[in-house]
Image (cartoon, rainbow, N blue to C red; front, side, top):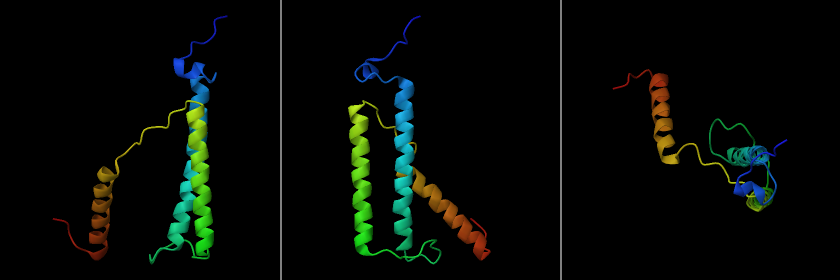
Length: 118
């Protein structure tokens, strides 16, 4: 039985491409959870009229949480580098996404106020 052929990147740590994808996906999910925690904290302190979370944290708690998130991300980055697992490329550019969100917002505001678009 022939052994699966591995690229040069996977030979150094004996991870198959499948294992690399699994590791990347796991870390990506952890990062998503960390981002959600950051957004929750930001939402709680937001002046928005429609915020979903109450601001029941102290500045020290927010700072400690932020520091922990930074350390977890640094550890994930270090492990991925050690295992030679490249992070995925971003899907969308922030500049390209922002105008479309702004256009949708303007459209929703126009509809809510009963105005017709141009």
